[in-house]
Image 1 (cartoon, rainbow, N blue to C red):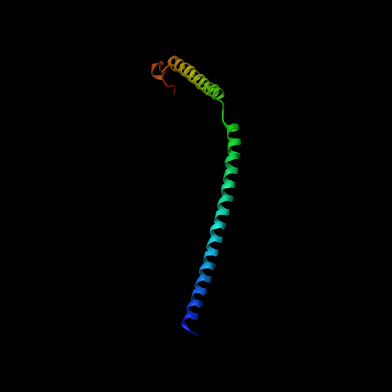
Image 2 (cartoon, rainbow, N blue to C red):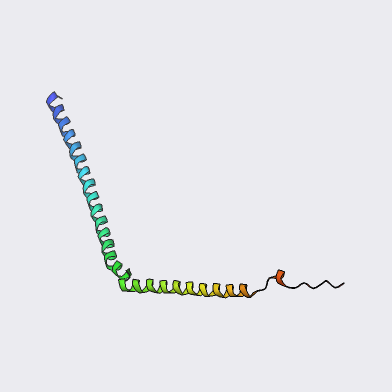
Length: 109
């Protein structure tokens, strides 16, 4: 085997390996692209589902104002009830006679 044949065989082997590795690399790249496209489709589907679902879960501004108004009314009524209870308690305490002010009776044997 002469030198020219050995060089041609070496070039053929290198070309084969480069073609094989290049083909494998392209296959890997295209598989990754397909996976990425599939993930993008799934993500777009999820975003579209959310786009349809979200507006049904929001509360209207007028409903929110009414709800907040009802909460404040309930808090106001609770405060009034507490004030009335404190007034009744104060009137009971003021009407109560202290023991020290009661006349003492002598102890019976």
